[in-house]
Image (cartoon, rainbow, N blue to C red):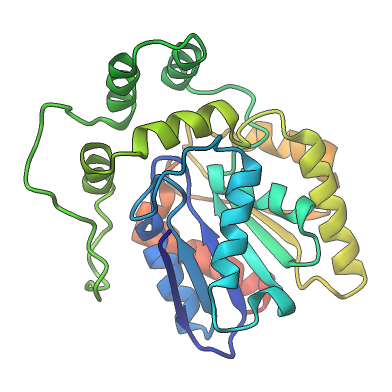
Length: 290
């Protein structure tokens, strides 16, 4: 598995967990902004994404939780003994909340960005792929459906343009299309990991797990073990995660007044926009006193 760790060794520890169709470069703008404020960050590629392999296993919250443990344990710094905060985007939000409920002693605070977990309805294309996978359709058919979701031409076979990570210019945008294309065409386990995550990952019906995670975070904050409020950030034009539906569910599960809700301009992939990412950094700086 691929893990990137950088920033001030004495700074506040933040782990960043991306979503189903993305990889570590999604966090580039946010990670750079937080490191400039003195934080220490870990950014990882989830199983079957980026440069992390695809284990022959069910991709559920337990598998991803182990990966977060591996990432924290890989550091020469005391992430596990001192604890850390988690930023989770989309699928990463569901993974983060499950991790809090499962390993309450490790997590100080959480920020959820366009999180799934309480998602009421999957996008139609995801529903079709999920149903086809459950019915064990032919692998080629499933890959064709996934290619359609990702906007990738299966017949397109350019020289591998691998995601660039060696000191890119700060003004450059992350090319998510190129990353998704590279993963689909050149990562042999990507399709299997994506589909397994869709079938078994913490995407929907996670109400009880979120209720437990919220209880853990609330008790930590009140006992001064936790650092900050739960922060939830959504895109104003997100067609996947409805901020209105999410807020209704959070009020019922977490409790009104027990979390901070913010909106930034953009759709579900707002982290790919530099201005929106800067807003996210500003929100975290304000709410977490960074």
